Length: 160
Image (cartoon, rainbow, N blue to C red; front, top):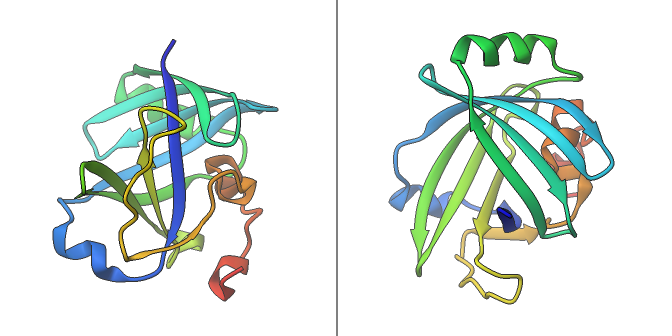
């Protein structure tokens, strides 16, 4: 069963930009969510789209299933989604054997920058880059669903 294990952090500085790869524009929305289960649609630029099913296990792990879908279907699903959409640019940065995904948000969330690292196991330790800020793993306010719904508000601008 595919399992996603990740840690999530606010980003405190632009130090990551020096080694970042090119960014990819992402648009996403939650189609359905109930408890720890969700169905997300995401477009990756103007060329690719995916549906993702996530079923939570705990604060750092969840079962994750991803399926490619036609871009036209994904765009329709974005329009039909419950709640708001998220627009962000994702960058990848390699740091001491791990690939960090840095999401730079747009729109109402402009200025929010979050970094995630996927791990092989819950016991695995990742060397934390100096540009990271506070860890928000397990903080429901930083879930894709909460961000799309706007429930984070502008509190993140004041350092929470």
